[in-house]
Structures are given as C-alpha cells and as structure tokens.
Image 1 (cartoon, rainbow, N blue to C red):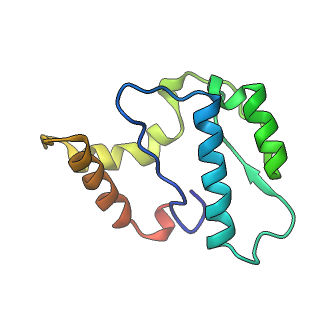
Image 2 (spheres, rainbow, N blue to C red; image 1 turned 45 degrees about the horizontal axis):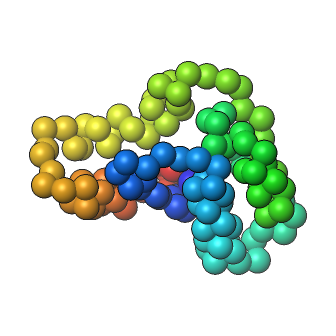
Length: 124
C-alpha cells in the first residue's frame, strides 16, 4: 500500500508458505506495479517497510531488494500476531466478513477485494 491505496494484494495458495523465493517474486511484481502506477514520480529511491518475518530478512530477499533499488527501513521486532495491520486494516475487514460462510477460497477472496475496493484513498 501507499498513500494512494493498495498496490499489490496476493493470496497465498492453500498449503504453501512464504519463503524467500516466493517473497522475492512478489517484490518483482511490486516493482513493476510501482513503475506503472507512479511513472515519472519515483526519482531517487523507494523506501520499503516490511516486518521481520524470516522470508523478509533472508539474504536472498535482501539481495533482491538491493538489486531492485528498494531501500528497506528498519522495523523493530514484534510478535507476528501483533502486526500493525491487525490494529487498523484487518478489524474492518473482519467486521465485514463476520458471519459469512464462503463456498470456496475464490469467493472469500472476491469478498475481501470488494471490501478493499470500497475504501476511500485516505483509508490507506
């Protein structure tokens, strides 16, 4: 996300885990999206903040970030269940989806995306 809204949303396939290879592929997608959405606006460096998950802190990921010109901001350690998004982003989505039963992952993802699409840019 940036100040204009959501840049990239990825839904991890069932049974998969996020590792350095998977995360690096997301970084490539993000860089392409930044080039497209912010053409001419990115002049020097992109400051990037992510948490301290193992896939984010791996040497392979750090090399990919450096190669792509994304400058990582330090993030203090915290418990994964206390991510900043848990305090702002997720509660509204949880409230919207509460009590619904989805027939498939695809239907649940569509409901989440509909909710995100309905948020004003100031939300992000």
